[in-house]
Image (cartoon, rainbow, N blue to C red):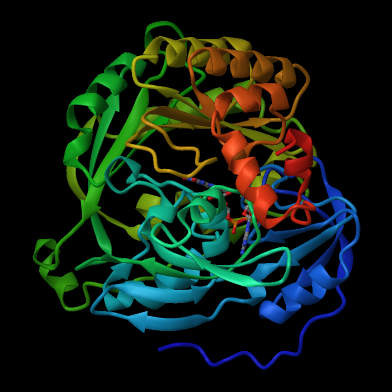
Length: 461
Ligand SMILES: Cc1cc2nc3c(=O)[nH]c(=O)nc-3n(C[C@H](O)[C@H](O)[C@H](O)COP(=O)(O)OP(=O)(O)OC[C@H]3O[C@@H](n4cnc5c(N)ncnc54)[C@H](O)[C@@H]3O)c2cc1C
């Protein structure tokens, strides 16, 4: 059921607004122009100023990737049609501004799930490709771009090029994870995941510390389609890294209780609450976060098997509360996410130890075991361990994170661009050895650097 063609006239205007990422740090002004189709993008390109242009999806990247101080920002969420559906092949063709939330509402009842979902369903397909996002199934299914057959990329000269893993692969793999800097992703053909039910069978294990968690994941992660561990990163000593590990897979229809078998693909993802923008800075401090972590760890079962959970409960627990990022107050927060390769477990221990000793409050941190990487030149996932923490912006945080960056680089690890707002460019270069290759491809398709962003300028991408 493709959507009707859009009839909107090309957009010419746009208004100047302050933009931030999800972490709400470092707002900058830009002209935000809604995009309904290719001509809207061309119209902006035809009159862009020296500060250039970047696309923006649902702004769930935490830092400054979808900002462009003094320049133009393309609001892609107005281009969100389904263009083609091939159910036997499990493939859909969509405009890049469509959200994973909408895809789930449309396709879960037909027996298809998105191939990869992050911890929120409020991201666009364009943002998912540009960030080459990963989910709980990275160890089995890789990242989002690996499920893209092709995409249409609008280049700096206004032409549109169809690229994919088999069609202009260099430009495709520079775009996958390329943070919007090779052009504007207009449309994509994505392979969906067939499912028999909208419920997951979930196993939960509490582990007493980081070593126990890593050992359990190493031995048994291959048995599960999806897995993630929530870590208490306030606990110290022998309890450092204690965690609640949840792993699962979609249930088959015959595994559902009889009353659910009649409507096995029933799906509803709704927002239940909204947080007002009234929270003062400092509400989340070491004491409140430690208390939260303690309660949360204790309330999880030590070991539970085959619990049926819904898609929102298993994948998107935070999405039930709109604007939850406001709880961090007006100064905002940083998400620090890094990965270190297998064999560098000591670096992960050291990083977690420094975080827990630092007194910087972090709500539940998330640890995952990545599988193989892909050819994406700036793609983040690579075989190893990845840890993500949300930390409120307070004095002393910058010094801690700078120290962690050094530790990560020394361990041949890297930080994740979609979460970053502060890494130093010289360290970033060492984390991404294929940066030069990316720059070369980018220079070929955009020699004047029309596509740029606050992130691109900060890191000299
Ligand atoms: C609660 C939460 C949980 C998250 N969990 C995960 C997770 O588990 N795994 C993970 O990988 N990420 C995760 N993320 C990060 C998120 O998946 C990425 O930042 C994603 O890129 C956001 O998509 P978006 O549509 O909001 O894009 P935006 O944040 O608006 O933009 C991100 C980048 O994509 C570019 N872009 C957007 N649309 C286009 C387009 N049409 N053409 C070209 N470039 C484009 C932008 O220029 C920018 O560089 C999480 C974020 C939140 C808030």
